[in-house]
Image (tube, rainbow, N blue to C red; front, side, top):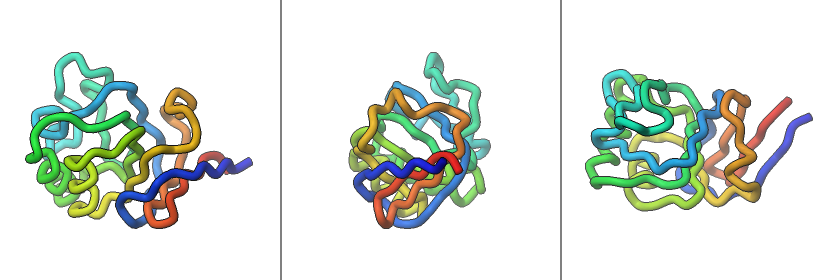
Length: 134
C-alpha cells in the first residue's frame, strides 16, 4: 500500500531512492565529501555513509553558505542525493538543492521519527509530496 504524505515544496523535480534518515543537522561544507558523497563529519550518525542516490532526510542544515556549492559539486560528480527532506528548510540547503536540481520538501505531515532508513521513497518537490511503499 502506497502512503502519500503532504509537505511543503522547496525545490522542483522528482527523486526516488532509499530513505537515509538522521535526527542530526548536517553540514555539507566539511561534512560531506563532494567527490564521493560520503559523510565525513566526525561523530555524525551518518559518518562513513554515502548520501548518493538516497532520499536524504535530516532536520535542517548547518554551517557555511559554501555548503550550497558543495551540493552543486555533489550533483556534478554524480554523488548527490536523489532528493532531500528537511524538518525545516533553511537557506543554505534550499539554495543548494535549487542550484543543483535536487528535489526537496520540508515540513512533512508526519513526525520525522516515522521516516525509516531503507524505505523506498519518492519526493515530488513540485507538488510537495512524499510517497512511500508500493
